[in-house]
Length: 258
Ligand code: MG
Ligand code: ZN
Image 1: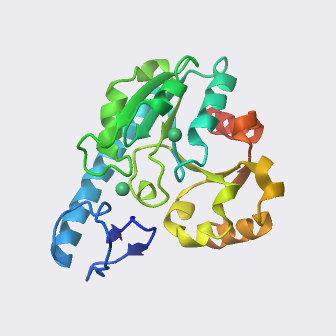
Image 2: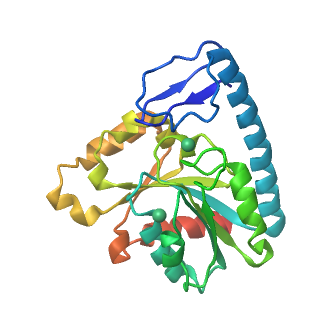
């Protein structure tokens, strides 16, 4: 109820029904409604979320009917989602029939990197006139699913748009939510982006090869995450070096459990 968010600077707000707190912002890229008054905006956002949730359920039903397990993979830009996926697809290609929905504001750069790895790849450029370009939502993913042959897939990974805020609020119909978090981002981020960190089952702590050069305090990160999400599992990884075995094991676990 009353979900509402701003995401140009990482501030987030959740409101039950009532007034919307207005803030001064230099740009309004995060406003999905375009409505001026708080009450009107709440109503519109509720309708958007209701419609989104309805389509997310339909997406999951389509995935279930085809026997596909889907993971919504989120992160900030540059955390390493695509690199993780490159190594994931290469490692699992003989075990599972994999598909990827590749969400990007613009370009096919990431989708191109994932071609030739035995997976079906559907590209979604969110800047092309959908409701919000800074996240994937259920209607966009529904569109992408139509372009995939779900009956020939076992595992679908949905690479969301790089953004630590609103992707966590838009259910797309995936069975699992995971995120990639680079050690370069700092141990305070679970506290600053609580909606995202609360939403995921798994945090892939990436770029651990850089730990000797960073101030990153891994135990403080774990403690901050535990405050927001005591059930989240941290998986250490170095995607650039293909050191992702614990992540692969998690994917095997969720796929086998289905
Ligand atoms: Mg990417
Ligand atoms: Zn957004």
